[in-house]
Image (cartoon, rainbow, N blue to C red; front, side, top):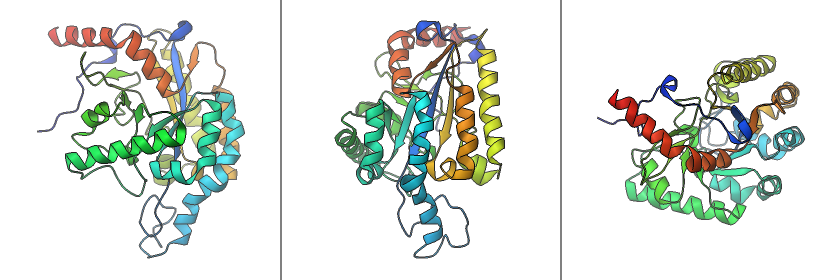
Length: 302
């Protein structure tokens, strides 16, 4: 029977987790920059045409994000400085160099996000997956000037071998395992690897596609999530707040206005470390990882 690649460690059993400069919470935006294949079903606005050989409606709707939506969002995202993590398909890295350069210029983090979001990261033989991840690393390194350190599988998918293969290829963390408000170890003292929180709830795909919420409701979700974590962090510091966004959704004009309002409300709050996931993972590995392993071992003995 398969087991998750981490141990049970309840948040109430952990020592305080205080970020640099005494900050009690971390915050980042998870920006999905993706490429989709024409003629292959994927995230859709309507299922009516999704099975057709050529589907202009759904393909064009997704393509709007990289052609128009992203550029509308760019100025608003500048309020977060470098605290943006780009979940980047390797196909998108090649096809949209202008978007990549905008992120490089701003010091954003770029994470591996599979080859395309028309292909879930599953069903691979171990060696096939190893080859695929190595190719993604090479492509992203060439496009961004830096090897990726973090990973988010398309639709948060992995295989039973992914964590080990990612670690072998220089990755130090994954966002796929949405099991916690804080970072936590997914390896040991020799095979160092961790999870950094990512939100599947404060995420525009389930909010707008699955639940059909309004832009104003999404804004309220963002603010409510931020405020609760911020309040809790006064006595239990260490939460990581994230918003997961796709330019073909929040980049639409009628959604963007509300999204920009939410960003203004949660930016520049005292006691919050606005950092991308590379920065969060690097700091945790250097300062908290070994102590977390000891805490987990003590909890298991108790």
